[in-house]
Image (tube, rainbow, N blue to C red; front, side, top):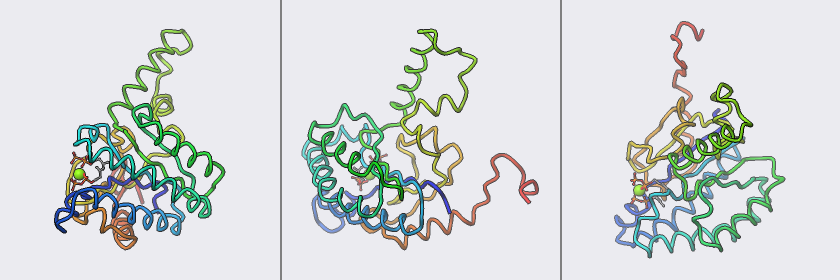
Length: 235
Ligand code: IPE
Ligand code: IPE
Ligand code: MG
């Protein structure tokens, strides 16, 4: 079983278009999938689930869509926070929170505080997140420490770098799922997925349910994870 699953939740807009609805309807339906997959991961005792909810690049979408997504975020956290706590789910967020509207920041922080002591699944929402942003922030922080004299350049190693990423407190995902048929990473967790197994499915996010999660996990379990070694060395 993977300890950490990351999902690029894609295809809300196309799902809605196929039904003759506006893209926003797809985003609302996507919340139903989030609920189901969070529950499914909890049932499977998966420790971490990271969901790509809004990328840095998504700020370039039409204002009506961005506003609707921010509203949906606020109303969902408001509605679901108690439910998460009851289910022992700890809410966390990665991304550039400074970009988010004030009300989003407040709601997110309340959800994080409310569930801080939960010990089951850790649900990490990537909001206004992009991997290049994250890596540059880490580089700047490390450079500042070197400049201040508190860090020796020779002590910069993979572990130190990882501690400067927004994901410092979580293990790297072993399995990355992307829905709706696109086979790209779209600036998500570039450093952390160095050795993740990638799984792409045609299913649009609003149709994605536990059964699809199980299919992805079964596929993952058939992979041989060699980490550079030969098959023979793994026996
Ligand atoms: C994913 O669905 C949700 C976000 C990126 C916020 P999309 O909105 O990207 O849906 P498609 O890819 O256009 O169908
Ligand atoms: C990636 O999906 C971001 C999220 C799922 C939040 P996009 O739909 O924005 O990605 P591209 O633009 O198709 O690569
Ligand atoms: Mg998309």
